Length: 308
Image (tube, rainbow, N blue to C red; front, side, top):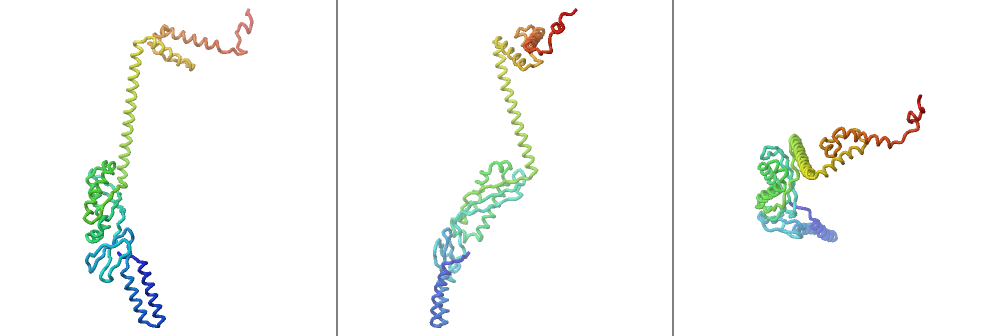
């Protein structure tokens, strides 16, 4: 495609201005016409390509050369520059809508393609519209890959899908002189009903893992209790001290009821249930003796003296 050339316009203005001024000075109309023709002839061959551009020159319809970047000249009427090829890295987005995966799940996939023109001659001569061709090649490749992939692999293996897409698209575009640098899968959209089902499945899996962890913790605790029981069997003194500690922990918080196993009572040598009851009563009496007596609560004998 062509583009405006400010330098060519500047040349035309300068040459035509000088010729027109000279024609006006000598009052010669023909000289002004000649100056205009010369200015046009000098400005038309001048072309300037940007640093990232390559220009395809056709002479009488046949490929002549590649020009640019910078200043170059063509022969007017005989030569033409129909293609100005951008050799920078270009990004193109493409997508596949409502495409079925291998397990028949409709998905929408968005991806980005990074590509670059390596051979401007092939791009200009072998494909009519290389940007449109790249877009269609990318979409068909994406649909092919989705159709051969399970949904789980599509969601978890995006990097693998991207590499596979890059290989397929690059193989198709290499004859056109185009190199595919990389392909990035941006997003994979699945139906809302399937999203809810997958969310419930993930929640159930987390609950299962939590129950497994809890069961393993209880098993470890039981193993520790088993080891402790073996220690108490071989060491009666340790079992006696543990039983006393249990009783102490229950009574120090002013508990009214303390549940103690009968086996523990025997190890503490308290004489079974009667002995335990007596001990508790003794602890209660000692606790009451420690409480200060109020002024109004005196012994009946002290209050009324010796009765008749």
